[in-house]
Length: 290
Image (cartoon, rainbow, N blue to C red; front, side, top):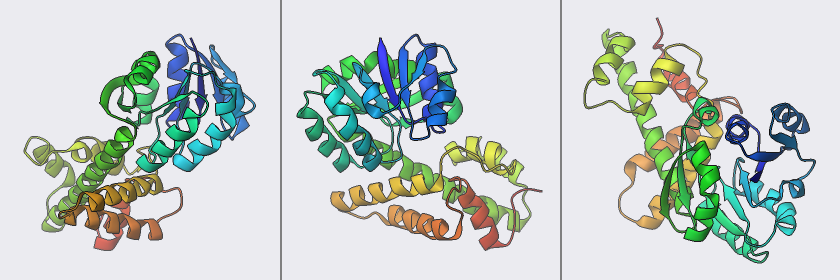
């Protein structure tokens, strides 16, 4: 089966290679032509010179936002056959996803939003979590490609996947910030961060940040989870709108977004999202590494 793939960055590069390893014939495109040429060094992948060259029964995108997906789609859709499926695996605004579905429908093309959760290593290993949404027929067509990338959850109609992704990243961000605040307070009291994490991870306070991000990316001093802070903030802004639309109190969500907005102003453009902790360390005047 031929698949098109657009976006060969930190996550997309690994996902593209994973599809080729799973036996798909992959046409790959990136604005950075050199990235596509590097991907094409692997058996099963060919480089496309333009988005139209990706036309296939299933085309997967892993791009920064809905605007980037739209730009690719406007060139790609006229070349796609009716009944084909365009799958957006990045973190887009659900409103953009629904607009894309309307555009694709003019060409008889289905749209599936299937944002992923997981690390670059999970992308390379086919161990991602995919939050797939759209028409059942379209999901069935996309299923072979999606299952090669990880575990697929069908979460609802068009836009539901991107909504859930934003809300998940809000929860992830709250956990990261709260864990940092707790560890910095404990450090001030004289507790060792590694000891605190060991106990927290054996107790009710454990979370993904305490179990994975702090041991692997903070205490090591690498701050390299592979997901940019600016992209996390984009998802927090989407989640904030979803919370506002839902009504009711959303104190933690608003506070978390405000914290990330502040960090975004102070940190470099390409800062990793876990560098939020480095910034909080500087604000507190202490580090979590010995």
